[in-house]
Image 1 (cartoon, rainbow, N blue to C red):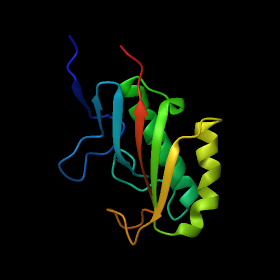
Image 2 (cartoon, rainbow, N blue to C red; image 1 turned 90 degrees about the vertical axis):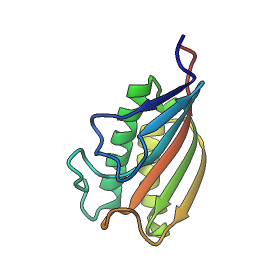
Image 3 (cartoon, rainbow, N blue to C red; image 1 turned 30 degrees about the vertical axis):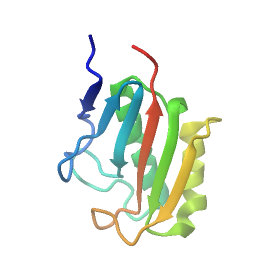
Length: 132
């Protein structure tokens, strides 16, 4: 019998900055921690370009979804944190690129800073997974 709670640490992602894991599955729900534009070596991908940073966030999200057996179409909720709210329109194209016609419930919030200097975007999601 599969345990009700399962933690995921994804090799393609950098080591967590503190005491957390990349995602936790509980039953058929996957809770994905805030994903950043960092690569495995803790380098910001995209430099100062919020669109390229957002693409890296979604590439990191794809890695988590694949590890857990999920897909972008199964995302139920998405929370986006931007250091400049005026970047909303620019990153929306990236959201469409990855989500296609799927539209999760979503919240977008401007924050004064993120955990690593230079990051402009962070995304967390909740995913509904199929039964195993």
